[in-house]
Image 1 (cartoon, rainbow, N blue to C red):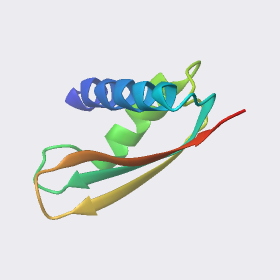
Image 2: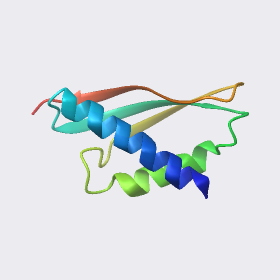
Image 3: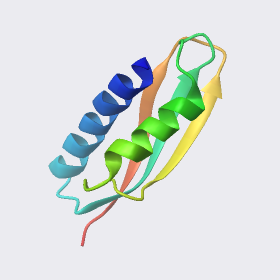
Length: 82
């Protein structure tokens, strides 16, 4: 399942961005997945939820927007600065 590797890369990007902003916890992630990207949105969500445990993204809300294209983008993240 290549979604697992893609989810790990996305999580790494999100954690790095949150740490740069001195965030303590990632509250939500907004991700764009194109229908022609070869990425199954629900498999990606499952993989991301699974690997996010014990990270600053544990229990984050994952919002997936689908498009017609080939993209897989981390559009935004919300961080709690506790």
